[in-house]
Amino acid sequence: MDLTAALRAFVRIVERGSMTEAASDLGVSQPAVSKLLRNLEAHIGTRLIERNPRAMRPTAQGVALYEAAGGALAVIDAAIEGARGGASAICGHLRLHGPTCIGERHLHRVVANFQERYPAVTVELTLENRAVDLIHENMDLALRMGRPSDQSLILRRIGFSRRILVASPRYLEGRPPIEICEDLAGHDMVVTNASLSGSALPLRRGLQRAEIPVRPKLTTNNAQVLVDALMAGGGVGTAQVLLVAEQLKNGSLVRVLPEYEIEPREFFLVYPSSKFLRPTVRAFVDFAAPALQQVEGIY
Image 1: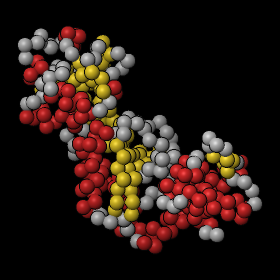
Image 2 (image 1 turned 90 degrees about the horizontal axis):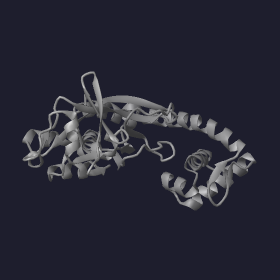
Image 3 (image 1 turned 120 degrees about the vertical axis):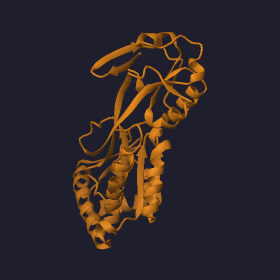
């Protein structure tokens, strides 16, 4: 029996709660993973996983082995990476997660530039508007909007994303002027879910804070839908500068209440503290952080 392979399979089963998903992560068949687990249990002489139709959970002995095996496998991985050349061995597969908004506009370009520098790296880039469980879903790292509360994550701060109010000149033409925050009540609003605090829009001007009640005409969690609606004259919208910098430059969108901004959101690159930080992951973090900090709208 390949004890290391069996331990890797066992660890992924515990983290995934599914033999099929563990097999997918490891790139082997489900029967192969099942055999590795059976052989490991026979080798140790005790049941490690409780099996039922809905889930697979570790036994008390399985929990103890899982906690010990993670550190042991990290030591093995570190030794292998050291034999390959350590930090100079930038190769292999990288699994990266990020929010759709910055991913579609900027993160994919950072990935492409990274691969130009390190052509031996393959990347799986997943873009979703949710916080992924890096361990359970077997991700190497993620770009997160908002400071994570999970103490098991290591954070690399990118910066704040500026958020402003914009509209198209076409929409504003012939409509009542917007000179104070309260004037927004008389206009159609196009907003993202993340920009609202309950039913109010939190705005700030220097140290001054205000929450303006709004009744949006359109609420969306998709950045492209938001920008398209604003460009079509759908109303006054909340937008991250990193999404509309080009439109602001060419005049197809203009700022509304330019002395006010929406509360900014903070970006972080995060990765699990329990995983051995492969040189490829470390190289991407060091490459991506300064590249993202150069994006217009991040400070």
